[in-house]
Amino acid sequence: MLNSFSPSAPVDGTCSLGRLSTYHVEAHTANDVQKTLNFVRAHDIRLSIKNSGHDYFGRSNAANSLAIWTRNMKNAQYHETYQARGCQSTFENVGEVGAGISAQEAWEFFEPLGMLVTVGATGSVGIAGGYGQGGGHGPLGPMYGLMVDNAIEFDVITADGQARTINACSAAEDAELFWAMRGGGGGTFAVLISYRFQLHPAVPLNVYSFQASFPIPDGQLNITQSAVHRDVVRALASNQALFASHGMAGYNFVLPDHMVSLQILPSTNTELIKNITSTYNKFLTRYPSLNIIENTYYTFRKFSEWYAFAQTPSIARNGPVGVGISESGRFLPKRLFSKPESVEKLVDAVVTAMQFSLQHGGGGAAQLYATGPFSHPVNSGTGVNPAFRDALWEVIMGGIWTSNTPDSIRHQIRNTISASVEPFKALTPGGGCYMNEGDWTEDNWQQTFFGSNYDRLLEVKRLFDPTGLFNCWKCVGWSGYDE
Ligand SMILES: Cc1cc2nc3c(=O)[nH]c(=O)nc-3n(C[C@H](O)[C@H](O)[C@H](O)COP(=O)(O)OP(=O)(O)OC[C@H]3O[C@@H](n4cnc5c(N)ncnc54)[C@H](O)[C@@H]3O)c2cc1C
Image (spheres, rainbow, N blue to C red):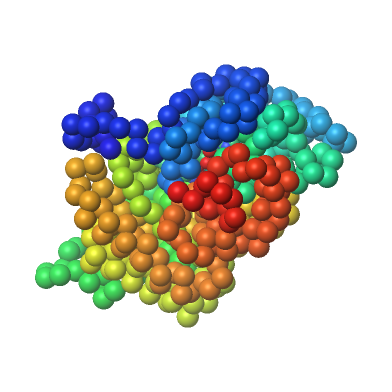
């Protein structure tokens, strides 16, 4: 491991590749990818595909592999109208990006054209790789859907080296591949070259930003007994169905000693957010023992302005890069937000999970994201976990360590974070988790990450990658991928 704070320096004297790929092909064109696939097939070499390298499970690396590095496939294009291959209807305002475009590069290209892109919270994440093939939620998710919901057409190279343009109008098998690559996960079915997707005419992003610190009680903090923790989580949960009905997104961080709560409403009506959040706002501002740090409404006319704002106080905590991190997560479905009794169970689960994490070295933070596609009805056109659509919150428990943290502590953090999600699992039997923000030690991973789509996704994998050329995270029965 490298030193997180000085990345060119190894932590101890010896530097080795570990599980990083041995060789990389810096791909610039579809032809580079085709040639690489043909080469690895001919020589029976293990392959991996890497874009930004942000994948929490490390799926963009594989020991002893040749990596196709897509980061420099940087083309971007705007189509005022676009005719997808084989489709009758025409799409308007279509974006097209190469496999290596990051979220920030995407909005910097489309913002001057007056268009919004359904990116996530962090500018450095790629939009066409693991994000755009695994789901892709963000501040525009409730209003416009996931990145995969906005996908219109992909150019891909399949394991046999064949270039294909795939969309919902393609002939049967290619349409299945398109379905699978809209949510079934990156690095699994084919190498994506170009991603065409729906853009949205720009509207202001109206934001309610609330931050407060909590009084720390004398003696040891027990979050399950802490009125302030229970009360703020209850207030948020009780308002969440209302927020969701307006397509409002939320990033909420509840920590042992403070909270950050951001609500985001894309709308030309810049006052509407004040009405929607008035009950929540009144509750927070009148609550006696909150030390309010910020209680402000903003209107950002450009996405880049929102991003600059969000990085300073709050979401920046969401984007640590260069540190070790362990996450576990769960989708919390609508039904849990509908009645006071079920909200109370939700509150119990949040404070129990936080207390467990705090007590066992995980830090005690809970992230409550309302950035999913809850306003977008079940869309059979995507292979994404159906549990995503039914969820008002995606809860994430996370713990971080630096390269100086001793192994024993790292293990402890990992075990704590894995176990801290149990109260949410107990509330959501048969439920799920976002595959890009979950726990790689998850036992019931087929159901948890893929839901009812698992068998169909596996069939597409068998069809297009029968020899398991592409990394297949825990594909049952594939040899050579056990590590
Ligand atoms: C700091 C940070 C913030 C995040 N914020 C969000 C967020 O707001 N919303 C959200 O939904 N997710 C978020 N994520 C999770 C993110 O979606 C995943 O990490 C995702 O896998 C990143 O995709 P990538 O292509 O950038 O990364 P990589 O690690 O390079 O690739 C991820 C996976 O996709 C495959 N892949 C990459 N490119 C291709 C290609 N061209 N063709 C086929 N397969 C490919 C890789 O093999 C790998 O399996 C965040 C992650 C981090 C680290």
